[in-house]
Length: 545
Image (cartoon, rainbow, N blue to C red; front, top):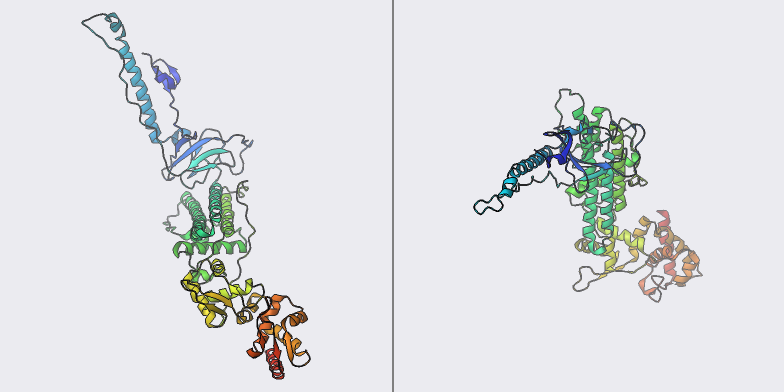
């Protein structure tokens, strides 16, 4: 019997004793499914492709390789177990191969049987009383091959150039056995970078969405970081000789640096040992920041405020793209060290497309919260902001939108309350507007006199003494002109105006010359003999402080 269909899969033998070879099914990308023989290597399934084009294999095994690439044998990427290639065939693929053979044999047998009647059919072709019909009935085709639609992480080994895909964090290249967790984390950084770039492209009307995207990117860094540390730890724990003691559940130990260190201390290894003190501080801060984002909707709590200088209790913590990428880059340094530890040699070289590590600056030391009278934190921050952005240092209008844009993390209710605080303490003048949540806002001289020393713009209490001396140096009582006094001081306008307004506050308002100038809070004042005495004593009091 001729086995035409089976012979399509012939690899040896002859006649009815054929050796058959059924090719493994391939994905549209040309990879084949592989299944680890190690039952504990979850999820066991992975894909194996070809070596990428133009990759030159080293002449000898590198220090990171454990198996000669391109030779018989496959390494389980999840457990590092080396076994024969045939033992990595998935059971569903074996079943599909058997079904293919059965289908081919059925087709050949049917063709042979029906062929026996072909001659009879030809001889009776003209017989009116006997009709013979031949030909095999079509048999059902084999069921579809094994396939999986889970999210695949595609990788290319940077030691041997082998293309492969995994469905979870894998530790080793299935071809050469080199550790590859640094490739996993580098891919995470690339995805995080794309999220940060997308968030940065959103306009001001999508601030909330941009913040949410930044938060997700930041959280993804720690999720990948924690999962990688945990995977490596469990691999080391399960591959060393048992000591009889039950393993304590890992839980979220790798979301905490000290607990993570204690875990790896079981192997006399510190995964954070290569980090500088500054890098470790940045890593610690960002781990804590992730907890605030994930569990407190980004609102700083007392624990986070202890670590971050910019944090203010009860306010939304800021998220900056460069900070997120710095966090990811420091995480990559730790993962590279783990990778080198797995290989029992130095860390892997940096890949060309890997995010370069930004300059790591130490986190700012936490400054004590500035307290000015009974002002709340937001009102104090607004006062500091006005002082910092003012160009002339005297009474000026504050546009509502400028205030909103300067404090995007605060809602209108909080801003309105803070403005009311500043007005109550004499730092702002306001005029209510119908149907508007925020009033029209104007600064007062008192704001600059109080806040300038804290922003470094000027020191009115010191400078006013010098201005008093200049004013008293004029010949007797008379008019003191603002422009002339400014010229005599030799100071920039921003420095001159706050102490000048402070000086004029000691003069009866009936002798103050208001209006008529854009550069000064007022044109000047009329100084009497009594004013000279008052100013002299005012300056003396300030000198004695």
